[in-house]
Image (tube, rainbow, N blue to C red; front, side, top):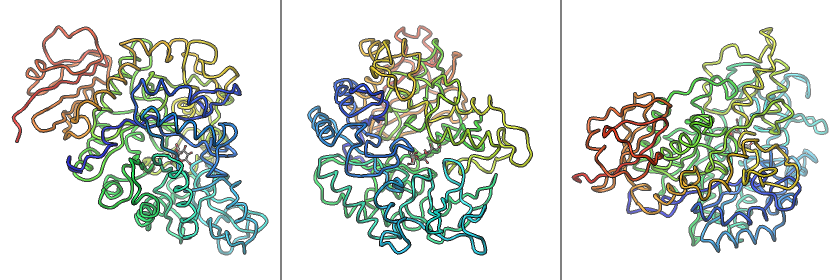
Length: 599
Ligand code: TEU
């Protein structure tokens, strides 16, 4: 996109709220909408422009609200539609926007659409979901008779047998999340109706859950078996044959001709840069930006529960390629964290007392100075860390609980997230189905502690007091004991806190067009410790540096001495560097500015 086509979200920062874990106003241990209203001043002070709410719709909560049983209401556990309207009005009154989570690859199995669909083979809604008979020549319900060999994201087969009709339905995620059949135009128009209903109510857009999985090859062929007993169906449902057509139709039906500043972001596991360019090319009218997964899978081994060492050079190569790929056409979203990812300071930084603040602020600086729209996940702005889960009873997430059960039974985890490097798959600890070593509970728990989605879902740490000020009751998942040191109350007035640093980064984006729109050039691609890049807009040039380590390190740039004399825009050490040379102290970041001859 050229600078003349700049749109409002290029200089915006989005803040993700996970309602269950944000703030509990009614004292039942679960966060709610009135709780969010009570914290809007805090968010305004941080300076974010847009709030994205994870699902707050009626749901059996099998996958924490990503299994929706009614698209046009609020789950009583979070409040009411009246509470929602008040939240929206209060958000707008503060000059912010509110974006909802659109989960339409699947519904809950308790949604009336599915209840009707499963009621009989002749029901008019039967074809709203993917129903198939058993594998030819096999008895329905017999082991291995599933229509295809696909595994589900949450362990086990992607097919659930329905005794009553003798057929199976497809669920890429939990068995309580049947996949909608987007081939059926009635399904599509029901979804567009619902989206218009929320926009008419005043919401400012949608984050679209696994939206690149809505178009499936209707033949649903078996996938290659790369490990364990399940095939990889992703070639047949990731960016499937009609995905661009569906998104263009959605745009035309829902967004075209609406006044106002709306935001659409598609969550797209397994999306490539080339595809992302098509999805986000403004001329094509699909979505404004996508969440890609490459950089959050670099430390995955054969799957997310079998980690491998993180290499800074891999991160630079990946993010650098995305920056280059969407430089002329399209737009990036930028994120380290969301409700599915472990906490970034524990993952790519150092969450020890000594370096937590430094590394969290360095990571924030590097991310926010890339070209794209940054997303902050609740608590990230405080430098919240992973949680000290001790036993399986401390976990709540279906993915973690199912993985634990499968691993302890000696089975694999089912379908890994598209993009995970399955080819590397060798013998896995915790997978003894083929007579290998017995699963070791300690190892399985260690993997969960490192990667579980629950790390992101512990309650927001507001104060050092009981339940971190999140609730007056015992929360649905335990608060992190480190809330005594890490909490909003302690950080908001501390100029050196992680919170204050995020505030400065957000203000920087609002004040300087170069942050949103400047060209990006990656430097030092082979350096394993220094992250370095420049941004340039007309004659203005910025240098961004981050030290991904606890040792002091020189920055080996040819024009280092020139930069060392340039204006320091922002850093994370208050004491100036006396050396005069361009070197970085432990986990230090710096942003420099200079003027260069343009043209
Ligand atoms: O996630 C999509 C996805 O493929 C992964 O991020 C996955 O859920 C998981 O983290 C694999 O390790 C979206 C939502 O963000 C997630 O919370 C939902 O569980 C999922 O879709 C199903 O709706």
